[in-house]
Picture 1 (cartoon, rainbow, N blue to C red):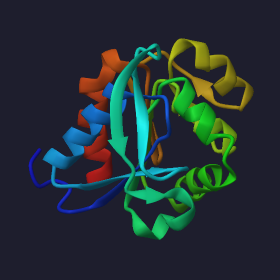
Picture 2 (cartoon, helix red, strand yellow):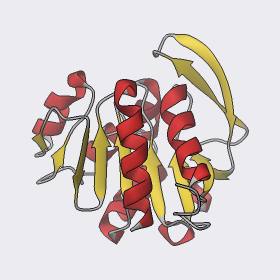
Picture 3 (tube, rainbow, N blue to C red):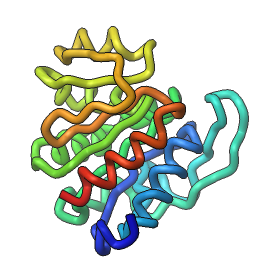
Picture 4 (cartoon, rainbow, N blue to C red):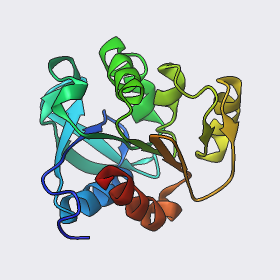
Length: 180
């Protein structure tokens, strides 16, 4: 995978409550493929990570505030999950607009587990074939998505995945999608 992304700039939109492995493993795969990843958030400093939504799992440094960046600054967007993280993001208009703008730009967007809540809030799930954590699927259906139970699904410029168990397949797919 080394070099496939050749310095492409990837935004990782996350907030407190992000599921550690869902940020850390995809980020490592992207970095290993030559990307330049940046954690973009709704507040500066650090965001607190979780393990299985319940246990503290350290922090990640925030590189940029979502209100200070635009889609033009990046070639792709990663939306990790954890239940608290996307819930916080969907309450911030700048984060919702960033997701909407990214999807509408045609640039690749990838989301795992509860991350697709951001797609629902941005009103970009309608008509898309998506997957997610099981408890999210009703929300996706209600937002007009076709919901499937598959490890990784790509529909146009959106790639979704179900859970941390699917991280190997998700990481491989996002490197491919972000490289194209």
